[in-house]
Image (tube, rainbow, N blue to C red; front, side, top):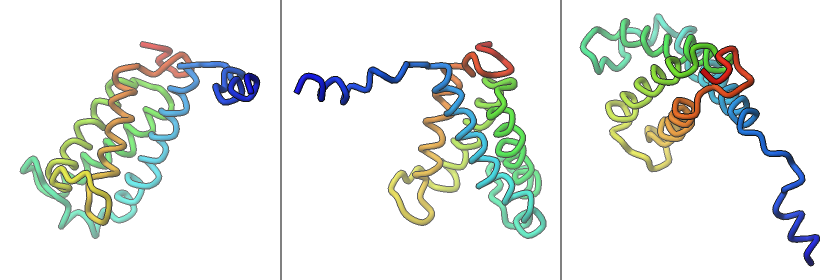
Length: 140
């Protein structure tokens, strides 16, 4: 019984906050680029006229800012380059989307802000912790 409990504690896998940050950065950054940002790049002409404009700069500019946050900053995060700055840009973008587009609805379902809220938690964690050792920034 004691050996079974020892197995459940999973202490045989070495702990590495730096490796965990690498996984989190690459996972979230790449997903943001591929599943959200790249779609906006490919559909820019059709999305630009109706994209939400929370800052009053026009739909095209708002879409461009979202693309910058999702594609450029998502890639920077995955690589670990200017990580905290990139995370802050993404945090602002996700916060604006969560409040203005999703009306702070955390409940699941179409049009909810659940995914933005979950992404936000991950990027806030990266912002607080920094990039970790396995990044171009190397813990800066």
